[in-house]
Length: 398
Image (tube, rainbow, N blue to C red; front, side, top):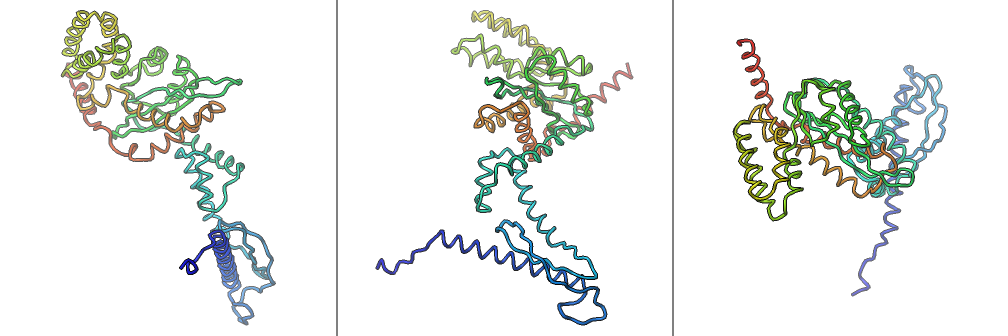
C-alpha cells in the first residue's frame, strides 16, 4: 500500500515553479516590447507599407531585475524613429509599488526583522541591509514632511504629554523624552499636531516645543490639557497668554494616592470622583471642602494638603461646555497613544540616538492618525461656538 503513496519534492517544485514564472515574465515583456516597436514604426516585421515610419535594426540584450528574478530582455533597435519604451517604466512603477509597501510597513511601525520576513515570503529572498537602510531614509523623509507640516485652522483644545524612551549615549543608557501634542480641531476631530525630542521635560524643552507649534500655525487654543509639569506651566503664559490650563484629573488622583495607604485608596478614590461629578465649579469647591474635612478625620493630612493645593487646576474644564467635560478633564486620549508607543518600542530596548527614537514614534503616530482615530468626530464643537457667542453677546449687552 505504501508503494502507491506519491511523494513530492517540495524544494524541486518551488524551484521549477519559480523558473516557470520567471520565463513567463520574460516572454511577456519581450512580446510587449515587440508590439510596442510595431506600433512605433507603424508596420509589422518585414511588412511593406507606404505608412511605415521606420525600420527594425535588430535588437540588443539587457538584463532586468523583476520580483520573479532576473530576466533577459531583447530590446528592439529602430532606424528612422527613436525607440522609447513605456513598458519598462510601467513595470518599474509596479516594482516600486512593492518598495512603497515596504516603506508603508515601516511607517506603520512594523519591525525591520518583520519586514525581512515579509519580503522573503513574497519574493523568496530577504531584502539586503543596504536596501532597508535606503528605505528607512525614504521613510524618514515622509515622516519629517508629515511632522513639520503647516497647521491651519483653530485647535481650541490641545492635549500634551511626554513619553520617555531609552537611548545610548556615550556607552550609557539614558532617558530621552518625546513631547507629543494632540489638537482638538474646530470640526471636532483629533489631530496629532506635534512630536519633538525634548531631552528632559524642562521649561526650555516645553518652550521650544510650544514655539515650534505656534510657528507652524497653531492658533485658537483655549485650553491645554496635561499632567502637572512646572516647566510646562511656566511656559504656557509666555507662548499662549490667552490659553488656560487643565490638569489631568487622573494624574491628580495618582498624586494623592502616593500619600494614601493602600487599604484606603478605594474609599479616597470615590471621594475624589464625587468632586468632579458635581454640576458646577462652586458645587465642586463645596464638595472639596467636605472631602478635605473627611480626610483630616481619617488622619490623611498629607492627602488633604495635596487636594487643597491642586484642586483648582483640575476644575478649569467646568468653564467650558458641559458636553465636553468628560473629554477635556483628563489626558486619556494622549495616554492611550503613549501606551501604543511603549508597546511598539518595548522590543527595541535602547535607541542609538534621539533622532531614531523620534522617527519611530512619529511613524507610529502617523499610522494611527490615518486610521479611524483621526477621522471620527471626537466631540461636537458647536457647543463651544454657541457658548462663546453667548458670552460675547453678554459682554456687548453689559
